[in-house]
Length: 101
Image (cartoon, rainbow, N blue to C red):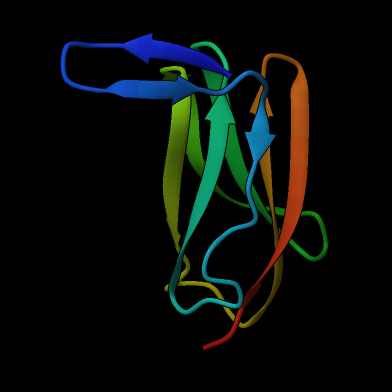
């Protein structure tokens, strides 16, 4: 990991792109999706249902390097298994999550 120093504190900068499991999981009605970006860049976070249909685009735009998180609110969705896809600089990670109302 790289360290970025300021006068008051040091921040650990991630050395690679990583996507965490959403928390909480199972969830109702919202969940947090965390990921780490080694450099700034365009990020896309999408949610798909079990049939592979796009349900929501949580994020599609530029983000700074470091630890990031987005929240998905599934109030309008039904119980079931969903998948979230985080894309960054040609890399793509897909994880499973469960909505239980």
